[in-house]
Length: 332
Image 1 (cartoon, rainbow, N blue to C red):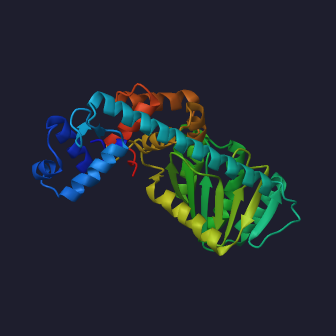
Image 2: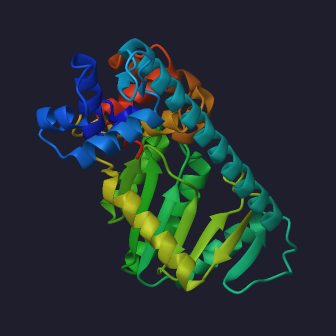
Image 3: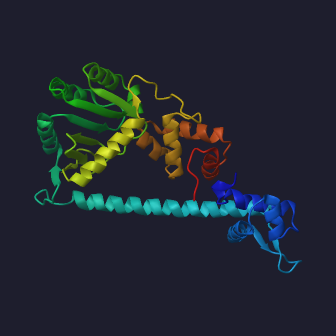
């Protein structure tokens, strides 16, 4: 019950027993709980580390359990500090990743590295993609994040799509759930599906991505502006990782004809599960809206609805209760 706050089942049982039977020593606790004295001493060490027990002021050599109203405040404060530290680590990682991407994007297009080709500008990107599509033989996998796509972009891609399908290329495309609100994008994906293309949707996609025959990938250097520049990747290790990423997202995505609101085990939709994960990462409503390609109002409605389900007054309290409910993995 208190695993989300750092207590394992044995330590929690020891703490509860010490509250109910304050005069019990190690031997009596072990006898009462049916466990070994070694396990009791290990739990006492953990409880002491968490400040849930302290030496008795009245009985020298004995331990005293801190009252629950004080102990729970201590644990909650500790959990909040841990979450704050984790958020700082996430922000530091994000900053480091952004710096790396910026440095990579600033490289001269004439500079090449093994397995990496620089593309600068929309014309160069589209020309290279067109050439790769013309040569693809067996498999094309695509991440197409964002909400509804522009009608002219969808229309322009139809000739190439039709040529690929006529050649027997397996086309798998992943869009975000929010495209279901775009009539033009739904019409395009329906057309693609009738011709043999496979289309699924997921609440969130990590980046725009195209993988040709599992040997070549094109990925933008900036997720905010895919026209700014891109890289063509051909390294075996990189392609193995990108193909595994695609297959993992594909396996949990919803076929286009299925409802994205279908409830999973635990009563959550895929979109709600994604919102919970993003809330746990500390993202704001605006950032969540951007990741899901929905309006900030929709993101706020989803977040508030989940908080109401758990009767959480704050996002920190929501995080703790989400772990207790099993919506998020507990901390070790």
